[in-house]
Image (cartoon, rainbow, N blue to C red):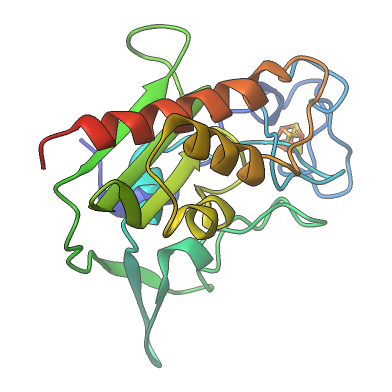
Length: 225
Ligand code: SF4
């Protein structure tokens, strides 16, 4: 059994975070240090990380919610508020122990998915080490609207790359109005990953993210919506 809010609020699967008997982790104990940065970091972040934390968000569902423009509804005793789902999770910066903008005493009461006219042409691809019971090395959620052979509109989010579900705003801006071709999709992926930084073990994820994004967009071009 699980809940939508539980999925959204799940914590990283960084092994050092869970090893509280010998590993240093800024997310678990503020100011302690981060053993993942110089350690085994194959699953860790390539975008938006900091010198405090290089963990990734483990959710699949959140990646789709980020791509589809979800809105999160929050409530506490003195009122309600809502925010774009893409603003809900935090990048680690100096405070990796703070993972979301959920305030003390606040509840997640609903997730709203605005209708998306081109939502029928959408998909989610998860690249992982095993066929089941494995978190994403890279994942891509995307929706595509075509106008003839050109991209009219597009939504893209990446998982497995950052401390939060990563909306690919740069790639989306790059693609609107461009021909829907493999070369253009690859260039959009290059644009999105231009600031990616590799750790000792996870450099392969940069190329994997570019190829996955390109392949998913081509899949959507060929999809009968
Ligand atoms: S990457 Fe983040 S969660 Fe993992 S050990 Fe470092 S501070 Fe802790």
